[in-house]
Amino acid sequence: MTKTIVFILKSLWQMLRLIFWLLAAALRLTVGLVWRQTLGRSTVYVRRDWDDRGVGRVRWSDLHSPRWDTVSGGAQVENPLPLLHAYVWCDKVRGKIGHSCAYGPGPHNIKICMLRDDNSRRIWGRLLEIAGPDRRLADQGLTE
Ligand SMILES: [Zn+2]
Image (cartoon, rainbow, N blue to C red; front, side, top):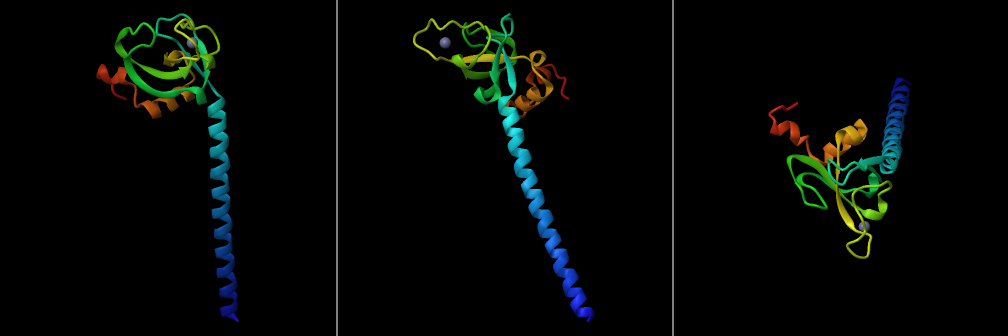
């Protein structure tokens, strides 16, 4: 009799564990998917160069290979401090930035830079995850 009860309890316990495991897996999958979708749709604010007054808006999913770099796109100005740059097709940029499609038939793959002050903390944090920690701080010896 007790053996039967132990068997039933054990089976129940294993079933519960299976249900929990499935629930956790489903949750991870849906939350991950929703997170990726909202991130893909979120707006990143970009400039042609750090002193470009025009700020453009780009979808996260249209940004390519963000990284720290001292050379800007366009005029190829060398900056004293590395800035976060990325590539984007110019027809994906909404708003006016320092790019005219005068170089020939577009769209053009242009290099743009992103400033921390222009962007939300969430976007900035995600950019740092890909490009690596803020090199401006590292160069000044102010590591966090
Ligand atoms: Zn263009």
